[in-house]
Amino acid sequence: MRHVHQPGSKKAKLAVIGLGYVGLPIALAFARKLSVIGFDINEERLDLMRKGVDPSKELDTQAFEDTDILFTSSVEALKEASFYIVAVPTPVDDKNIPDLRLIIKASETLGHVIEAGNYVVFESTVYPGCTEEDCLPVIEKISGLTMGSDFKLGYSPERINPGDKVHTLSSITKIVSGCDAEALEQIAKVYELVVEAGYSKPLLLK
Ligand SMILES: NC(=O)c1ccc[n+]([C@@H]2O[C@H](COP(=O)([O-])OP(=O)(O)OC[C@H]3O[C@@H](n4cnc5c(N)ncnc54)[C@H](O)[C@@H]3O)[C@@H](O)[C@H]2O)c1
Image 1 (cartoon, rainbow, N blue to C red):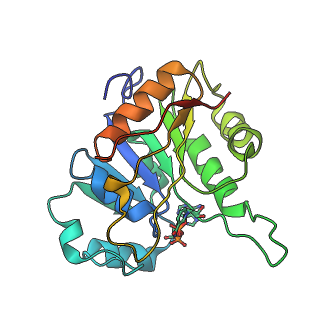
Image 2 (image 1 turned 90 degrees about the horizontal axis):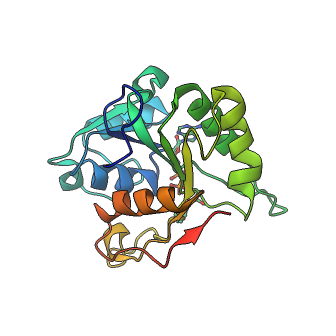
């Protein structure tokens, strides 16, 4: 994990924020390779995960075996990470207007925990521009850090389909983007740890 843990004092831990259909499989896949912090705000769901039960009923207990993961709702614990993946829900209302409240809340949480040298990658489904125009200002304002020079931002949409056991995280080509060439290279390297199908032609955020 070159770059990911420097500068700053943190260990090269990866955190996943939002452990649902999308976030839990990602967190467990990384937890076979790295030390992972699985962060969620729902204590009932966290309790099930601590017992090796997927509240979304997609994964069996085996998926939890041989993993290094802390299931937590502690913002303090989240500070231990240096690479953050956001997979909170982004539902639409009956008029198809996206409800950004949860992703903005997650951005606020990130603002309190990131430090210089860290990476933030959004996996939640959002419209073009949302990451930079809606989420980034919240992270920058609370953290006092600047994207690009202080921390790196990326976007990698999840493409899994609940119930589909063939096209899984590791077998679907991953699309990754980064705020600059260095971020893109680093983010792709991190995902290569878990995505056997590789990643798509790099896209830059800007
Ligand atoms: N489910 C799918 O098939 C699918 C496929 C592709 C993309 N997506 C996208 O992935 C994102 C996540 O969807 P999902 O289906 O995994 O959601 P989900 O409802 O299954 O789970 C989301 C989890 O996030 C937690 N959460 C909510 N707000 C939080 C916060 N502020 N901080 C920490 N945790 C929080 C919830 O407690 C829950 O455990 C959405 O943007 C969705 O559109 C979903």
